View 1 (tube, rainbow, N blue to C red):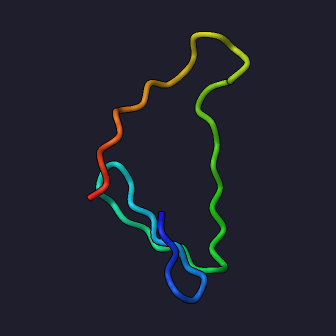
View 2: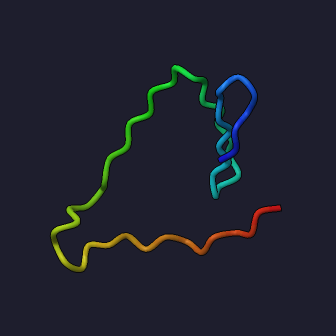
Length: 51
C-alpha cells in the first residue's frame, strides 16, 4: 500500500490486482476461520518481492 496525494491509498495485491481507496472509502474485512480453534489457520502463499 502506498499513499497518493489527496489522502487516497493505492493497494497492490499478491495476485497483481490493484485498488485505489479514496478518502471516504469504507472497507470491511472478515475472517474465514475462528481463530480460537486450533488447526484452522489458513496457509498463505509466500510473499513476492516488491519491484
